[in-house]
Image (cartoon, rainbow, N blue to C red; front, side, top):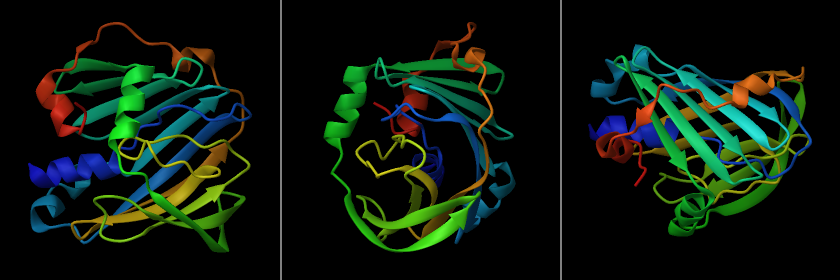
Length: 216
């Protein structure tokens, strides 16, 4: 259970609100893992291999699907709120996070130390700049690549992290496990407004599930 919670906290990254309003499109990220312990290697096939982010002005939609669960997060920077939707084992759960709750999450975290360093990398057609980030709970500095051509988002578990632009790739290690996330494609076509509508049929998320995801 501890390893599963560690995986969720470090791999299930939730957009929490756009800081600018000048991009519309879809970003697909590929996820890879290194140094998984034996108990997690057995469930490696069930771990997410990708995640998708749609952005339209102040609104965003994050989606990640696995064999066990489908997760969607719909956020609105204008209101500062997010809604997490999860479908697992035939059940549909919803968690609404207000602006005030998001601010509490940020204030409860230790501010990351960001060091912008020389070096660039071409990712999905963008020349990305490099940064090292020291975050609480990580084995060492995390390596980020970002572009200033796309507005940044905040992510679950790292709400206090504010880079100069959208992350295009990063690699983090915690408890010996390394997770790499990198943009594989960017589609700048118009995004349908219906993607940001909150669907019906979801019940409030139970406390036990919230605790597993690191949400109080």
